[in-house]
Length: 116
Image (tube, rainbow, N blue to C red; front, side, top):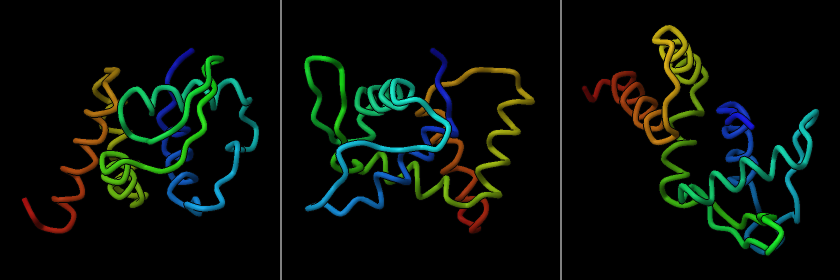
C-alpha cells in the first residue's frame, strides 16, 4: 500500500479536533476504506506523529497528536503552502519521507511569514 500524504493530513486534522475525554473509536474519511485509514494510522504512530493504543491485530486507536504531529499540521493548514510543497515535490519527481514533507512545510511557512 502506498502512503497518501493528503490522507495523512486529513487524519491528523481529525485527530487534532478530538475531545480528549470523549474521543471517537474510529476515524471516518469519506470514500476511504478502514484498512487504508488503519495503515496510515500505523505509519503516524511509528513516526511519532500521534499517541495511540494499538491492539494485537494492528488496530490503532489514536488519542492525540504529538508535538511533531502538531508541527506538521500547523504548517500544512495553509492551503497555499500545502499545495506549493506538494507541487514542488511532484516537480522534483521524488518520493520523500514524512519528516522531509514536514520540514519542507515548516520552511515554506517560515518564508511565508518572513522568518527566512
